[in-house]
Amino acid sequence: MTLTVLSVASEAFPLVKTGGLADVVGALPAALAPRGIAITTLVPGYPALAPVSKGATVLHHWPDLLRTTARLLAAEIAGHPLLILDAPALFARGGGIYGDAGGNDWPDNWRRFAALARAAADLASGAVANQHFDILHAHDWQAAMAPAYLRYAPGPGVPARSVVTIHNMAFQGWFDASVFPDLGLPPDAFALDGVEYYGGVGFLKAGLEAADAITTVSPTYADEIRRAEFGMGLEGLIVTRGARVHGIVNGIDPAIWNPEGDPALPASYAARTIARRRTNKRAVEKMFDLNRGDGPVFTVISRLTGQKGMDVLVEVLDDLVAIGGRLALLGSGDAALEAAFQAAAARHPGRIGVRIGYDEPLSHLLQGGADAILIPSRFEPCGLTQLYGLAYGCVPVVARTGGLADTVIDANDAAVAAGVATGIQHDGVTRDTLLRAIRRAIALYDRPVIWQQMQKNGMHADVSWSASGARYADLYRSLMEPA
Image: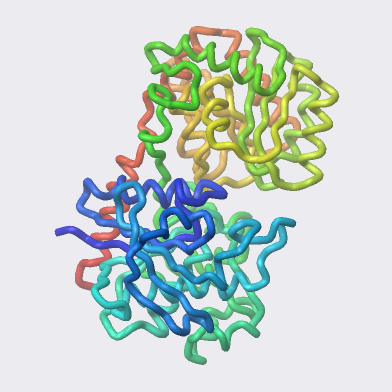
């Protein structure tokens, strides 16, 4: 029997993307279809979706969706059903999808994403004609109020079962209690086991309380968020949900991330033709004004934040150059960190190159041409860049946390001797631990037979959605079983 799932999120690749959440949401429909799971994706009607919205079928009209008018549009995303919440007063604005051009959060984000969640709950509980879903799958805080609406204010039909996926516990969507009267929830919802959180309204917390199941994006992170160090104040709730919390590692879409046919690469290659990567390395050197050479090129493709360990990386850049490394960095984030990396590039012309911003094709080139990717995250729920690195033979150098620990096999002596290593892990994120990991990477790079074996191991690893898709399918089906 085919199960119908409504996947609701604030972004989905290739329509709109600020991070890995979009990649996951965009990949799930194709990953689950072979397993009898039909996923329909619901996203807000941002300006970027105008080409898709044009000519779309209008399925429903809300004259008053949290005090704004809205329409539900039906379209497609990569051949799978797509629903767009067309609410111009909430989503048709310049700047970013979460904030203005100056980087400030939109002050009405609570209303914008509560409206998205309310619309999702209507779809999943019979309030929209001819729409039926067995499962509602809400991603992160922007969609997490949907299970709360199903619990406290469902439509006229039988509410769908619900799943909330935590992509990053650090982002929780907390708002002042003054917003509660405008959420359209009954008074009893503002309670400790409801939407109330530290005297205000917690969107993610509300979803975690109400959902029938909770997933997060790696087994290690599912364990970590039970502890105060990673739980961000919600560790007690995670512990009380017990066996309803599941860690399912993310996958990547091989139709998009495949060095054998990637149009962003000057030279395509496979594990058996890995020597062709050299052409891409030359292209990286040229794009980032790096001196041409045979020594290792490290890359960083990241938000430049403390969570990602970028402050520690800045501290070791002079040492990285001194011991023979080069760096090509693509990212943006904290202004002080952006300036620090640009200053390092000015100190080391030809050795460090920096591009502030994000460029999807360039990120593919970096994975296909750099020798190793640095990911010194203090916490990392799953991470996708290390999976792209594995698939492209760009050896990951990662902190041992979350999904990084679950997906990279450290090149310790036993793993190297057994021929199974795929990368380098380090404990903790300090100047010393990161520099030791970089030194290990350079030492292994100087042993070409071992390095190439690591590259090939990564390229042969299954980082697709195959196994994880099966786990999601099993979870969905388990929710449909009689209690």
